[in-house]
Amino acid sequence: MPRPTVSQHEYGSLPNGELVNKFVLDSGDGLVVGVMTYGATLMSVETADRHDQVANLVTTCKSLDAWLNCGSFFGSTVGRFANRIAKGKFSLGGRNYQLATNNGPNHLHGGPQGFDKKNWTAETFQTDSQAGVHFTLFSPDGDEGYPGNLTVRATYRIASAKKLTLEYEATSDQATVVNLTNHAYWNLNGHDAGSIDSHELQLFAQQYLAVDEGLIPTGAMVDVAGTALDFRQSTGFAPGLKKMLEMPTKGYDHCFAIDGLVGQLRDGARVYGPESGRTLHLQTTQPGVQLYTANHFDGRDNCGSYQRTGAFCLETQGFPDSPNQPEFPSCQLNPGQVYREESVWHFGLRDV
Image 1 (tube, helix red, strand yellow):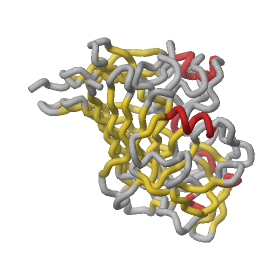
Image 2 (spheres, rainbow, N blue to C red):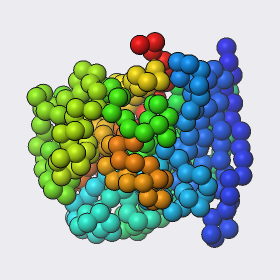
Image 3 (spheres, rainbow, N blue to C red):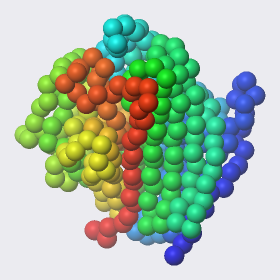
Image 4 (cartoon, rainbow, N blue to C red):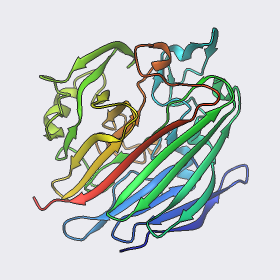
């Protein structure tokens, strides 16, 4: 049985002099993953195709400076609240809170100095069956407008059979809201292989969240049947993308309600890249998954010089704007409680 390993390397320094460390996680049987302290970021995911050619499957940057200037959340841990909060406002315990509005009139991905912009502390671990890194971050009361002193831990762990797990935990000394996700952009043919048109996607979701023109949920849950968002069976991206590129979102940017019991690890998605033969099987405890097809990519430096629809995101998360929508699964974290969520990526190959 292969023994997973983890190694540590200096990656560079931030403008304030803080050291950024990179960690390489090796499953021992063909999956090698890079993560770093800046943003608790998933930097690379390398595995072979059906012809034994190894490629990195996630968008990446060539240097730390490039990571600092990339505004696209490549592989970052996003928080305190992933996705959008309408007008950056919510109420909790009779108090009103105003967050930064960094996405038009709305709050996005924790604000302009969210968790993706923080340098986390790190501790490695290794056993006979797994290896990984615990990243830890302290977010003080008032950070980006959020209440409560929040302690967060993001754990990447690798195991044999090409399995990568990400676990989030958080505690707070005041009532607050928490919604964490990883923002990796995937292309199973290789991060620089061009369009994802040929990819086939299956989502274990009967419904998606209807949104307004600002991508804020209206509260309505819509059946995917008969729409371009129906991925209940494995479906190629190309036909739906052609339709969606004509929509205001200019592609897919929708949160799907994952079937099954929220809080239990269950199937979220399966993806197949016919050109490479690679497969990705995603499981999660989270309520939803945001499908995003890199609609803003246009070849500029702030998106790593990648082109539109050159990658896709499957961001496992709580529902957008849930602090303002009591019918959605709650994102509230109270003192004495522990926020826990888990997502697992399984990598494989298909012959045809």
